[in-house]
Image (cartoon, rainbow, N blue to C red; front, side, top):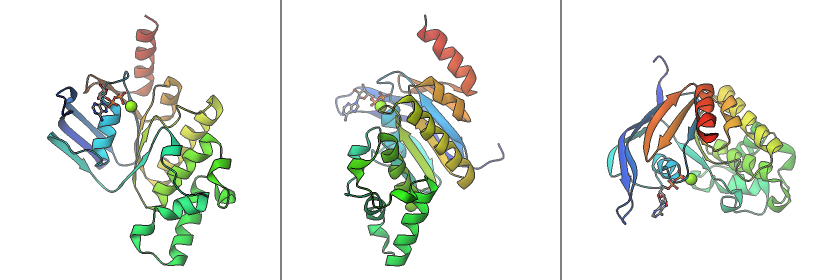
Length: 224
Ligand SMILES: Nc1ncnc2c1ncn2[C@@H]1O[C@H](COP(=O)(O)OP(=O)(O)O)[C@@H](O)[C@H]1O
Ligand SMILES: [Mg+2]
């Protein structure tokens, strides 16, 4: 492969203290600039894998290598957005960086423009749609200059139109800014927007490659 690897997972296993095994010798590689999706039944370990990639959980055996810094977008933006307004929320994510007032203002306006929300900087969070809230969460990651974005079922609470707007916008962001993204979904139509997909089953990658091939395979299984 000519592109450099942004996310490398090698032989990763993880069990909860109760002893149940969630990840079982899981391996996958994602190149810089790729938009990949992760599919799998409920309980197959998708969220656990993302949390290990983000450093929110520590791996027990195996290796995780990440080239850069990770931003996480959760299923429910109400669990992620903490400040009263759009601009304040994005700025809040920058407090640890000790930037000047002007630098913060610049990062906030640039990242909101990247997700087409520049006009909503002063809007209260409660007055946003679900899709707009997800875009604020993405702007937060862009403002922090994260080059790797992890999405855990970001469209699960959205209607079809906002769902497709969001996935299309994330694809454009990845491609125009050279980001890398791993996106967990159950909604097979979203596969039309990604470069490559992985299928997780019982904590292990059991298939990967062309999203259209995986889409057909999964829909034929689902339809019996
Ligand atoms: N904090 C936790 N403590 C114990 N078990 C958990 C915890 N979180 C998830 N699990 C279990 O780990 C397994 C994998 O969960 P998860 O990674 O959330 O799967 P998915 O995202 O694919 O639905 C499930 O059996 C789930 O019940
Ligand atoms: Mg999950």
